[in-house]
Image (cartoon, rainbow, N blue to C red; front, top):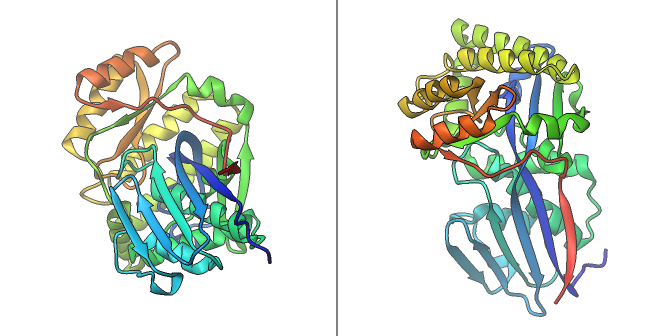
Length: 341
């Protein structure tokens, strides 16, 4: 296949807020909970990958988020034991025949629980797929992404975060015996829902793999409390799916509230004093419900608020020490463009 060596390639992929059903997307947990589904929404705090082809064999990897840059004489010299191993593994997989400079960044705060690393994997894969003319379609990228991220984080990676990064909008990811099935939900409802959603960063980073791995191990080891909590989360995710399809905000809020109550039971570190404080403040200012994004332990909290209360809730959270993110729900998924040098 011919490879594009003439133009700079820029790929962007959105992050997400998860409404219900997280953790069940860690294979094979869904097999123990028939009917498992996760519901999430794409967020316009995108991950970006910029690739500049080179005439020589040099490979340059740079992450603007962590301020690190690595230079290798050729692809054969690229190492996987550095902080940029995600970039390195993707370059090794797609194997461009010439040198490249890869620069990445994510608009979501590090450790936010918004699926930033997964969005970055999709942006990387999308850009390299275009550069090398590998011809991978969306489903192939969605299979590749969790495999590579699992190699990096060294614990199982869930699958839900990659779907909004590819497709945008509101998604239901059905986790079935025969595989994963994506369903796009009522994207025309997105602007209305956006006016009733607030995303607030706690100021504390988290690592989702740690909490999820502890939950995973307890479930596999037969912990009945963990199994029961995940079964209830499965039920609430199904209810959330129905509520979104019906455009029923009170039901969405009630599912969100109950999902959070059961998620808090999954691991001791899921909630923190700061998260609990922000929950109380938001409810007092007009929030109908809230839950932590991702696996908890810090990161962001998403709130569904009553009509006309977004500004009040945002102001109250900011006054309480939270960082309300300037972000919108978006229908845009993975985007790959070429820019003339």
